[in-house]
Length: 486
Image (cartoon, rainbow, N blue to C red; front, side, top):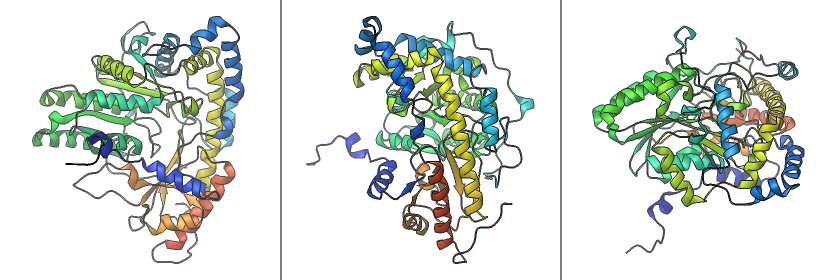
């Protein structure tokens, strides 16, 4: 008889990797953390939040509903504004920078319309097909929130997008089921997969996102092995991906949905594309990309999630999602069992912030701030890292993904990780971002660097320290100097 009182779920669930990384940072106050994906502390909109809260609470007519229980699905006004905003993003009506912001971004050294040929040492990831503009699909123009995939009736407001991911996975997957993820992917989602007793298989990335040829080979292999019936979804962080910073183009989303639909007959059930757009609104360079919701009838297999945390206030912990039936009803019921609904006051605050234009004004400043930080990080990487290290300039989001030669290990037990700690700097080992796969060893020569929460001074100093750590343990040489960019 087992004396362990925990359920199987309780026993399976492990602490997220970020927990011990944050513990290290707390234990060592001098440590410069380039690990945590925090947003910029100085950017948090205290004044705007105070103004809106004062407006809400100044009158009983607005204050009382904000302090009362709300519905499980969320505040109707916020659901409508969310639906309108996501549709506007897909129509290209939200993201363009104003003239002032464009000039500020350009002063950071980033081209607003693209990064051109000066992108340092580009990461090469294989021979996956690129997105050719000549083959761009002609999608149906979305109707302005009258119904269909952008209807407010499909929207649910959650306690951050993480809760949405948890509930969708709970609604669709049984123990032993399969999910496909990017390789590498958001490591917190891998923890969710492990906790639910699921299996994950990685789809390789190329320079512009998902490697469709590899996706097709995986699907075909699952069909031949009889495992396709256990496949429930493909999880895709499609904008400025955590951890690599890459964006999967609209054409690739379209073709991925076609592939999933093609294999549904053999699976015997729908296979969904779960599109996580947490970083979508943090674009500061390059062209906007439509979401998978804009793929016309194929969007019936799309589950879309986003967040107001990263583009406005992380502490608000308000996310949202668009769901087709029957998944919508299942998630609504699960949400009811979780909490009966997300915090009313914060939903009312966000609805006013969106409707008043404060959200977009704050976002414009935030994007300039991150463009500056990204440019500083790229310059520091170029200056301090050995020439064999590859990276890719970000066009948005919070991360730079760096790849050392395969002979240089970056994992938590590696000489480089220990050397980095000696030099008082912390990064996320890339190994944490790969799904367990019995057919191969996880790559152990990459790292995720975050410029989101660090100050400009800490970005510069942290990468100088990390460059020193690299030279301490670089193969074939001791204390070698960083080379020039090629």
